[in-house]
Length: 68
Image (tube, rainbow, N blue to C red):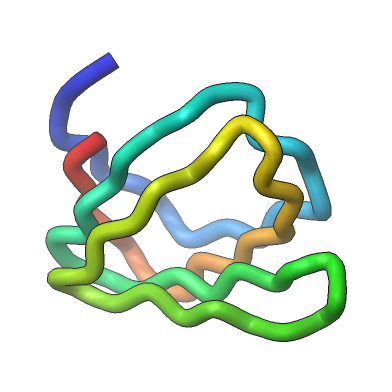
């Protein structure tokens, strides 16, 4: 799955990522809450890799655009 995705604001509970995905955040921001309750903040221009063992909750506060 490759393309540009526009995502509405959302809050999601803790879940296991079922695939490996490289993501480039084009605009917007995302706060990911890790199992140890630490937070990882992702902003426009950030690139990261979701691995199939990543467990996190998400809180996207604004409309976001990403390349996946």
